[in-house]
Image (cartoon, rainbow, N blue to C red):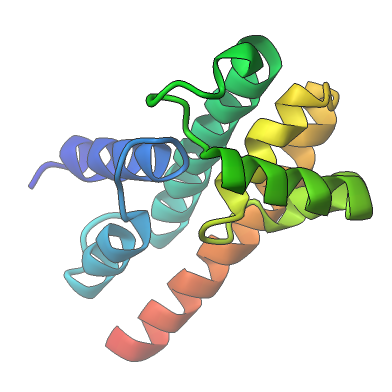
Length: 146
């Protein structure tokens, strides 16, 4: 597989995993590490950028399309939206450090947009959290596969 295919497939997987589209970037990243495809540092950066970009799409959906929240294509269910809103209202912008969490992370990023969190603050906090998660995954994969 070409280097371009490795990095672009990881970017797309990480991007889709952070949006309403299905994706499992952790599995793909681990697979690339196990088969020694790509540079560890570049894999880490590409996965992080893709995942943060997907979260930025969610922020935009929350910011500009919140009035469509009852539509089927909207990335967060009504129940998930309400749960994330309670979390966000209770703990504030710092919850964005946990945007990588399953089930709650995507709704948090939509809520951040809906509640008009400044985009640069959003990007900073989401990037820190997602980068930390990918560092953890890379460290585990490297220790497991050598």
